[in-house]
Image (cartoon, rainbow, N blue to C red; front, side, top):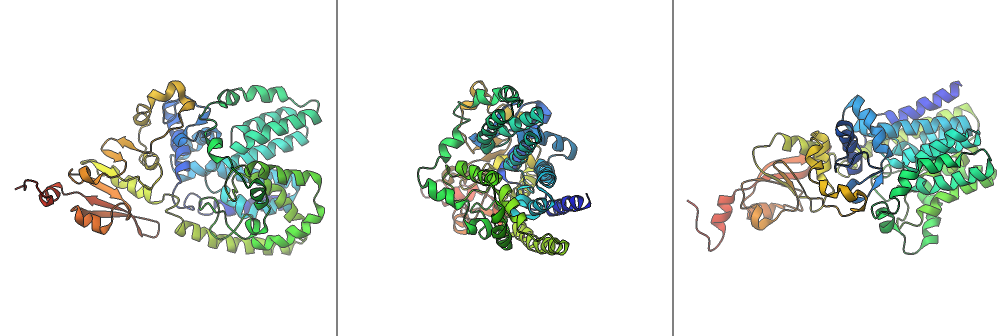
Length: 477
């Protein structure tokens, strides 16, 4: 019992250290979860005005909505911030470690507690992390012969993430055939709402854009490449620590040793998720193959000598390596995580006396960060998108352009925007020094990253100077 508590404490330290501040900022997907939870809490509707939707329209991607619903509780308790947005993922990660300890043993729990992939996905708002926890818990309950609870948990996992939408029905059918008392009818009843929207264009929008057009076998093999598992970070910058892979490089040795104890069940568990993930064109997608890393962690645990000093040494070694990656994640990836948008939100909140144009030509949905950080009343967005409510799940089209009070979020139109007394905000590519000089813009301030380096530039227009400089135009006196 003591060792199990120590492993859980270790998992909490690895996941909880500087929680909410690392990664620095909140990603657009995280902001969507948080703000829609806030909107549901206040109005019973999401940002688009839909009452308790099955899927989250989220920029036209129609992502799973269970994470958003569960986030309502921490938003109510802690307010709308990074901690509340990521809280569900943190708890999911800790529950996963606890269940692994209880079922696969302390050694496997230790590996899951310290492995980069499981730590990283518990530190930010990831639907995949919630889905993995529910899926594994459902499997454990089925094996322990708790058919009612298992069916409910596995059914809920289908609402958590895309991969579980496929894996959960397969497991339900398997357990129904293997255990005569397994309650597959409960599964069908719980999934009625999800099935009802599964044939809409919104529900299939992600699948239609992510279907792999070829190289299936090559992509499948990449999920078992030693480089991808033990050396290279995920190619997507917001899906892993900067300089570690799924597992630490030194875990390859116990992995090779542990392969001697692999069995058919572990092999099947490791292979099935990449079968699904390889249908997408991504070279290596940790979040889509997350369930496959649990059996691999079990294999690694079988290769670690069962000696107390070994575990102490490995825990310290992992902590040192992970700490350096936490520092890198915070200071090198703050722009990718949208850290600067919190400062931007503060600036526009205190500048309501004149029009503001925020350039979004090279950015994601800027409005969602402003909405989250400034607690913009959800009704302001709900009224803008109300025309889509009658056919909510069939509107994959989405515009990043928004108008909020005195703020317009859109590309800059030089021909007209420099002739209006207003503020223009963009990065250095959107407004270069030469363009600022050409259009008579004066720098008001800059919006920095976590290292105080400029990311966005705030300019004041001077239309009278611009007009006077134009040929064949009457000079203003």
